[in-house]
Image (cartoon, rainbow, N blue to C red; front, side, top):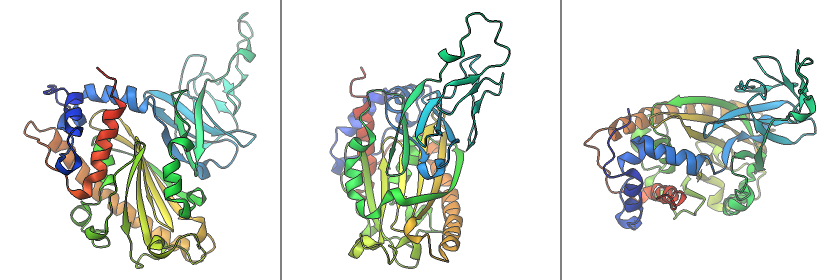
Length: 380
């Protein structure tokens, strides 16, 4: 349950927190996670204005393939149209305002589940039963409102802000950083949705640092990554990242022999990319997995969880088997992460919760806090 008292106000507390240089920084104040007031600011100034990732374009390959989301309280659908383009549309019927599609799937037309008003894949109204006796009804005047939608390196983004900077411009440094991985050519092979009982920022920060791996993941991947080999550079305004060197015990984490783009240690380097506000990507030369997060109140987060392999491995006979084994491992890791992050949120709700100093391995968390403060720089 969120705290009712705000002392000090969470935005002022966050600003004070991020004015301290990283070498002396602490974790974000508890009220930034637990406050309904701060969540309202996030919905308005972060999720209501930033680009939000709904998944991979490879999962929307055929005409009629669609995915739905609620972004800052607005129901949206993204669909592949008859001409092969991606469209984002309001997911609300223009008749009595029911939501239209739900989850993910494929459809020949967008049919309202309430009165069967039917829309084409471009959002135009195809037909509406029993409307001939309304003199003012004109089918051609009805079209689902469009939402901005862009594809970047195989990722599909939507935004409610018509003035938002294009994704490719916003993330040009990311594209340059991981150019040798050819991220466009990673095909999604699994997708799930979950809701955990923690704040979305707790889960985002958990991804942004690998300091917790030896403890939280002692039963799975904790022994595969060495703290002394983790590199946490300063973040940029639109993303942060850190890197880990993997060993060849997990072959599909290594660059495929056909990959001549990556050299030396690059061939075993894993990037953990945090693209603001909430797309979190583990990118290895052989496979990827991701989380895309949206808050469901201070104490719950909706998670889009997916992943797959680099197309470099597509012709390998044992690649699918190896990835199935990896997915089993990822599921076990998720169980561990859920336990850790839900414990953190319970602790944050305590009146005795106090933020401690950050490790040098938590540099991305500090940069994330600065990003949030910057998004709300003009809030009084």
